Each structure stands twice: as C-alpha cells, then as structure tokens.
Image (cartoon, rainbow, N blue to C red; front, side, top):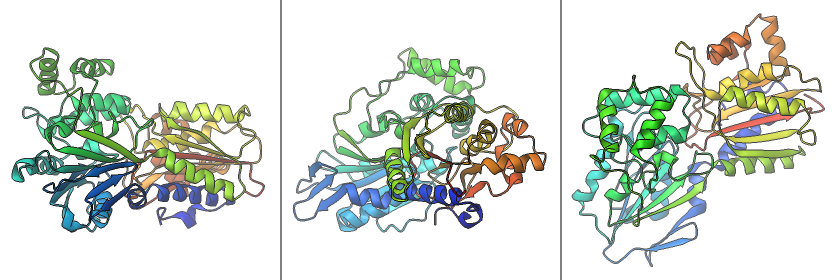
Amino acid sequence: MFIKNKNDLSSTRSRKIILELIETGVKNVMPENLMRGAVSYNDKKRILKIKKSDYVLSRSGRIFVVGGGKAAGAMAEELEKIIKIKNITAGIVNCNNDNNKVKKIKIVKASHPIPNRKGILGVKQMLALKNRYSIDKNDIVICLISGGGSALMPCPPDKISLKNKQKITELLLSSGANIKEINIVRKHLSKTKGGQFGKFFSPAAVLSIIISDVAGDDLKTIASGITAPCSSTFKQAWQIIKKYNLQRTIPKTAKKYLKNGIDGKTADTPKTLNNCQNHIIGNNRFALEAIFKKAKKINLKPLIITDKQIGDPVKISNQFSKEILKGKYKNYNCLIIGGETTPKLPIKRGNGGRNQHYAANSILAMKQYKRRNWTLASVNSDGADFLPNIAGAIADNNSLKTANDKKIDIARHIKNYDSSAMLKKIKNSIIMTKEAGTNIGDLIIYILDLSRN
C-alpha cells in the first residue's frame, strides 16, 4: 500500500475516496507498468522496440544500461526482465534506494535532493564503461531517466568540489527559482548535464527511456537533460544567479567557472545531439487520467484542470481556493491538478515540504467555503515531500475547526514555513508513505460537496 496510515486518515467518505484516487494515480505510473507498456525486445531479430520506434542491433552490437533517478532502479529491474540479462553486457544506474532485485545492472545508492559522493562515483563508473568495453557505433546505450536524476547523477567540473556543489543546490532550492532555472545553472556547473552525458557515449546510439516529473515534459529539464541538446548558455545561468541574488553567496570556484564559460574559455553544452533519441514513457498526465477514470467510475464529476501547474504553493493554493469560492467549478465535485510548485523558503524556517505547505495554506484559503464540505489532498508522487516517508497532507473543512479549538496559529506556521509541525498538531493530516519508486511530480485533488462527508 502506498499510503501507510490510510485507515487513520479515512475518517470521512471524502477522505477515503481522495486517498484511493491518489493511490490509483501513483499505481498507474509505477515504473514496471510503464516499462512493460512501452518497451519490448525481439531476441531472434535483435530488435529493441521503445513505444513505436524500432532499433535493430547489429550482429556485433552490444547493449549497455546507464542512467539515474528515483525510478531508475525499478526501471532497471524491469528492463532486465524485458531484454533478459544475457543480452545486457553491463550496466550501472544511480538511484536513491537499493530495494530493486537486479542481476546484471549495478545500482548505486546516491542522495536526493542534495548530491553526495556516491552519486559522483556512480556517474564516473558509467562513463568508465566506454573505455572499459570500447563502446563504439555498433553498440546501443540505454539510458534510464526519471525525476530526481539531476541530484542523483552529479558530475561537477574538476575544480568544483562536492561540498561547493551541495551548497549551490541548497541555495537554488531555497531561492524560489523554478526547476527549469535550477537546472540551467546545474547544467553549466556539470560535466554531464545539458546533453554532455549523451555526447560522451558518441558514436554509440544513446536511447533514453524517460519517466517525466516536469510540467510540460521539457526534455531539456528532466534530469537536467543529460541526453538532450541544450539551448541554454553560461550567460543565462549567470543571469539566474543574479536574479535570485546568489552572486555573493555561491562559492568562488563556481562563480569563476561560470565567468570562464561566458568568456568562451570553457566549452558550452552541445546544441545538437545526433546520436541520442529520447522517449517519454510516463508523466504526470498518465496519473491524472487514471484518477479521472476512477472518479468517473465511482460516479463523481471530475475535471482535470491542468497537468502543468507551477508556481509558489501559497499563491497557487489561494488562486484555486478563490476560483472554487467564486463558483468557477460548480459543475464538478472532483478537481484534479498536477505539476510541481516551488516555494521560496525563509532563512529561518521549520519543517514541511511544498505539498504539506499547500494543504496547510488551503485550510485558511478555504475558510469562507459555505457549501456542504470540502476535502483536499496534495502529495508528491515519489512519497517524499522533502521529509522522508511523508508524501504530503490532507485537509478538510474540519481542519480549521480543530486548529481553532487547539488555538493553533495557522498563519504564523505558514509564514515560518513550519507546516509539518502544524499539521501534526491538528492530527490525521500528514500522509505517511513508503518510497513509491516513481516520480512524476505532484498530485492535488479537491473533493467538494459530497452528500455524506
């Protein structure tokens, strides 16, 4: 079961339904299901099929497997079953867990969201495969990519230390920069991001199998586009640093590296990649459509509002609450939203991820709702809303009453970004999970005005 405390949280009909819908959505984007639906291999004809594309392996050609992301381990396990381990020469993938049962592909347990040394060593082992096996134009390199790949596949330039890389990541994550901006900076402080990883394995064909966690499925953004051509530049990366006033706080080595890139002293990321083909086999929309179908089946009136939601969680929570209060969605009682919000963290802050923050703020934002009832759940599909084993939170019209009865200052907790502590005080709000083994971004569901709450 994805949600460990489901029974405790299911105190009303609306809560029970909303949690079942979340589990339905996550189940539909589990790596094993997506891989089986998109990848096949004809052993006799030596044809690898990814979605609608066929790739014929030459008589002397070999298959190698590399990549990284929160779902990479599960993807690797399923790939071994599809291709069969006898047809894989070697493989290494970075993941944030080592729970998967693989026989040929090595899994390196790295760190997310802050990169660590194991992640760097894993990437170096992947790159070493080229010389070790003399990978050439007859070979195929399958690259398994999923959300979280940016942090799980670090490879900073030689002059930038891991400690400096970690500091830059922390600064970007707390600055309010969105994922695209963060990844532009990451690409230009890396030896592999921004298409450099794919280029390294040239002339071999690099076929990427991707589970997207990015709103809009921008190949340049997913895992910082390690096998996609990069249109951004060193100059743009520096402009983002300046935009969020980080030019005085980033390490001097990183600042110098970016300046050298702007001056043309360091080669920029590749703008074309003829040896790489990228295939997205799953994304946020897959989860939303499964939720929609399930909601229809149980006689709700669902509406998918968007699968591309970005922005600050407080602002987005206020926006949707205002639209609901004004009756914009009066013909529907199940609102479905996907994407990934990006909070700007205060210097002094408590605990809580973006989804807990969204739910906490909604308690205030929905307080004027005078119809029957409302329930909201906001979760990260990977099962970790910044804090381990917490996917997000659930709230409803009873949450405000409970907070008032306990004299909890909701506004203060939100201002201090201490939503997790507040929700724990309210009780039956934190959604506890085990690692989902996938990552397609966030899922937000509202259920409104059920006849029996």
